[in-house]
Length: 255
Length: 245
Ligand SMILES: Nc1ncnc2c1ncn2[C@@H]1O[C@H](COP(=O)(O)OP(=O)(O)OP(=O)(O)O)[C@@H](O)[C@H]1O
Ligand SMILES: [Mg+2]
Image (tube, rainbow over all chains, first blue to last red; front, side, top):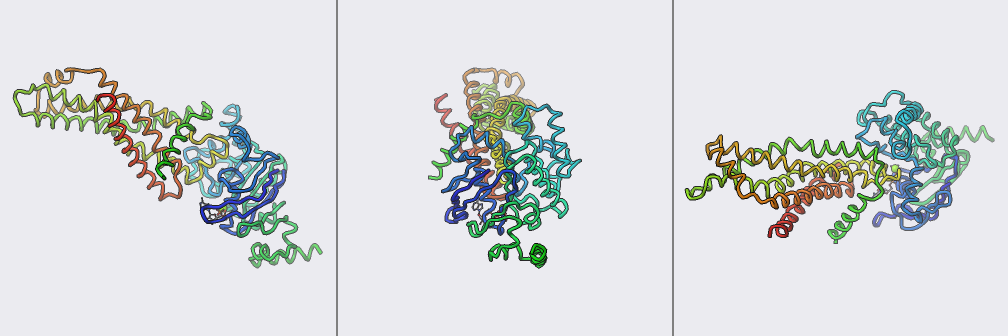
């Protein structure tokens, strides 16, 4: 479980996060949604300790991140998997080497054990035969999937994904969403996902936090998001005719 | 103010190079790769420049000695001195600040821009050790590069002198053996080691702490080249006054 209390973050004069409090539960897929530029990535990077913040606290299973010693942070971080918005694959390594990297760094596995594990996760992200390609030879969607494979290869306790299915086709997108939900449930991971993909919201949003103008405007789940009459949420989520229809049908069906 | 801040950040980075080392099995491959990129990859250009500039030094020296009272072997002697004392350690290091330095800045800078450094840090890896330490170790082989420049520079001087008709082989060989002071070698290699450290760390600093996008990677490489050369020139002055003055 991750608890965030009153988080403030500015860049110079630009106040990006203006006091956000929420919790992300273990074994659940927690989604952060909001417009482009609303601060989702900044929020995620604060959680990871990549950005310093002016005020607030972040606790990982009760351990307050800013109070951890360097070694304790390192230890915590070896239990974190992260998928960056731009994939952030190491471009001097092949796809298989990228995926095996966390294993090489943090485990004592033999080469063949690591290769087996990399095979396994690459199959799960639907990339059974891209092992020897360099990241620059892979498409954007493939890079995204490699990044996901690298994030989950060492069974993290906390998984962060910044727009895991931007750049993916609808089918792969659903495969990835389901994969993230499956492993979250299977290994009881605390998963936090940034998204503006409405499909993911409705499929896997066990908890949804809606950010707007640097504040938490609304919080709920994929079930309550259909019923909310929060103006900001409805105008963001149901901006397309299709989703307006979906919403109407959902409400009719569940009356 | 900004300069002071940068200098402080630079020394903190130096300390972090040696903190929390990366696993040896991983580090080993990084070091081998950097030896290949930084040392082996520089040998060609260093050999080329060393040989031809050595030739020019010999020709210039002999053209400027018109007085018949000055012994002929002086060409070899002067060529040896200028190559060992200044040309190889300092001049080649400035060239390397351009070649190796901008390579280091742009490769680390690109990793910063594409969030690869964030990815390392999120995993709990000391990114400064991971990125800079292998370059530091690779550049401990830098004296080897400079030795090659010295050797080929003197050889180039010989070729230019003998085949250009500026003097005889015997005179040149007598000249390069004349009045040899071992401490000059020590002085040259002390400088070389200091410059190697500068070449590994200042470009890394500019790559690691850069902000922005692809355009800024280019700018950072230029800034890195300027500062690496400035520091090399200043330290050259300082070391020369301390060691030979
Ligand atoms: N390193 C930075 N320096 C200065 N400002 C920044 C920095 N990173 C982000 N910002 C600003 O913070 C705001 C939020 O950016 P952020 O990247 O978090 O948006 P986002 O919600 O992730 O958007 P998207 O959905 O497009 O990825 C933006 O106005 C951006 O300009
Ligand atoms: Mg973002």
